[in-house]
Image 1 (cartoon, rainbow, N blue to C red):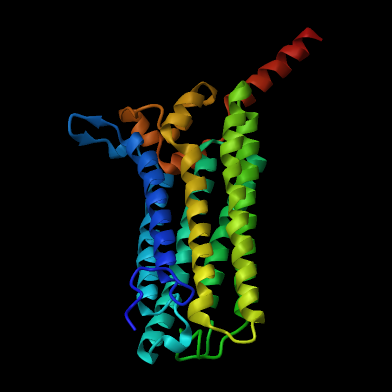
Image 2 (tube, rainbow, N blue to C red):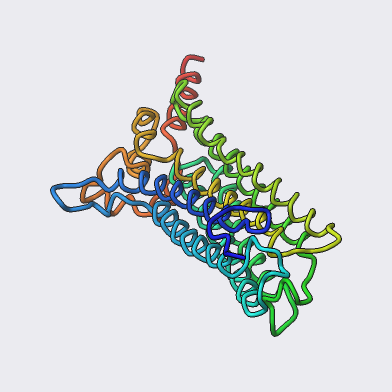
Length: 331
């Protein structure tokens, strides 16, 4: 019997994974390139890297992690992902397990860096003290989530073969990944709520609602996470566990989780969107962080991430104070 090649059948679903993985990677690449490239600007042939902020570098790092993640998933397809486990040779199955093990770390890393980029951008919008503390709290939760999930993944199965998820003895994978992904959803929803709160204070009239809509893209991550959890428990409850075959749905759901997280972080903060909304930004530091102004020699010092994190006040806060003082004078 000839090889099925790239034909998608019930016994050979690997090509479907490849299509999903690389389509998602291309979409994320376009989003991040659009965000970063439009901020670089050009004078002749010289790119102005000074226009980039810390959140841009985090998004690029997230894309690089996703690139490696995509390659590993494709290698899993070559090792047997999408085939019935009885049709996979023992050496190929061991390679599949090791690739699957490595992919989990990249999955966690890509999501963590993308979430961190969204939080950093929120800090660059110079929130008031309560929102600032909440943003720091969400950042801390994001880092703790990554560390705890990474350590748990590293020792998910019995030592020394901690990668043997198919033939080895492992802890409850369904409960672990359900908890991990639900915490990730909570972090996304927290970022969404805090960004809406920060922008809601700005003097931006109706244009702020466009940003609310774009920030709401983070809610879309609930969809692939829901399907991923459903597929995980379907696998656990199956009478016969055909790991290399049933994991196709989990792999596709996972890549969609990463894609949704990265795109939801990139699209709202693209320079064209920010230029449309720029009358609402309160200070030069904020305008530099969104890429609508170009840094001067003094701005290059004052617009670094440390300075941005130290800057706290909104113009609207000054406006409120002046209104309060004028109200007292009128009395």
